[in-house]
Length: 191
Image (cartoon, rainbow, N blue to C red; front, side, top):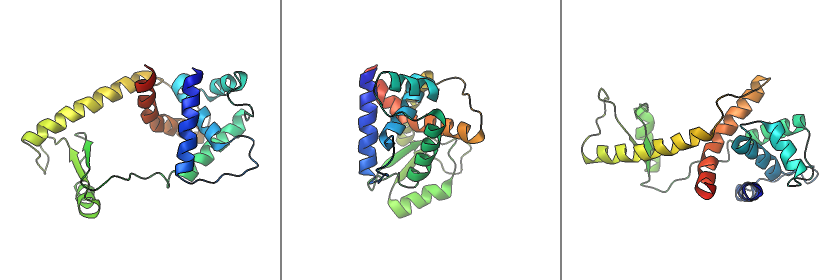
């Protein structure tokens, strides 16, 4: 379990450095440590921040652990600071696969015109834009792989979340959504 915590910390720290985020030198707990605590709570404790906080403090993984309310405030602050900095930066002529629910044709056209990125949704039978033939088979095959991966990730997620405030619920929900990619990464490494 400590190996997972170390890998999580290293990835968080490298991400902060890559995004060129400067943090206050007077903070008791670094941003990477705060992010690690949030991710560990999602991965190992079903989103229970208090259990993750206690584990990381008792094992000595994070020496200067904040109390529960300070940690929640820091997690919310990180969310606000990083949301505009993390952008989807794909090379030209990349493809993004989408499911049947995707029907924003204007956005699809704008992606092609402005960024030369191809959005390849699986089309419904009554769709205005048809996407049949050989490409439809490829889309279905890719979609099946993605759905299988997310099904495996979903099994690791909790069936319920406990939150006292609206902001707390939002924080836990966003933490789980952002951590789906982390969970798949850790599934690949450790399972």
